[in-house]
Amino acid sequence: MRLNKVKKVVRKKLCEYPLFYKDIEELESKKSLSVNKDENSFIRSKNKVNRTVETEAIRSIEIDNKIAEIKEWQNIIETVFEEFKEDHIKSNVVEYKFIGNLSEDSICDRLCISKGCIRNYIFEFTYEIGILAILKGLITFK
Image (tube, rainbow, N blue to C red; front, side, top):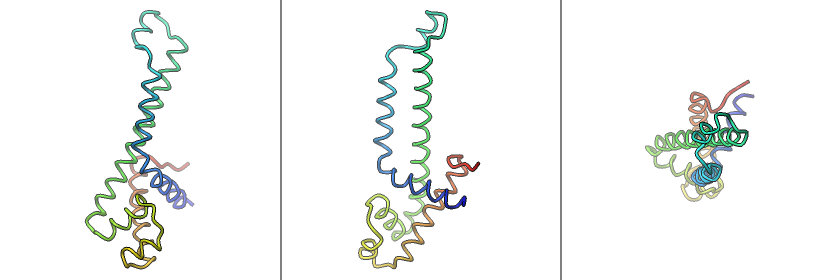
């Protein structure tokens, strides 16, 4: 049961991986749009916390946390991919599958290896990412 959850979360993040840079840019732009004034000077001048300032500060913190999480996932995926680059065939399988979004059949045709071998490389890749994500606290169990 837990293994399926880890596989599902890692697969979802691997599908989102090509969009990580765009997601970070969008979150940064949302953060810059929400900050219209300096919250600290506004709080000091009024000597009390305004509801609007409080909401903007909480939103800014949530955006920062989301950006940090995306960067952590990106770092884990890139670290494991760098390890896979030592084996040329493994790195090609992972690149074709998750970055090129190719099917197993087309990967078989391009690299002349079996589907079972491709599945084993993909499982190895996802499990290594899953293990690192668990160790870093990105995947938790209740």
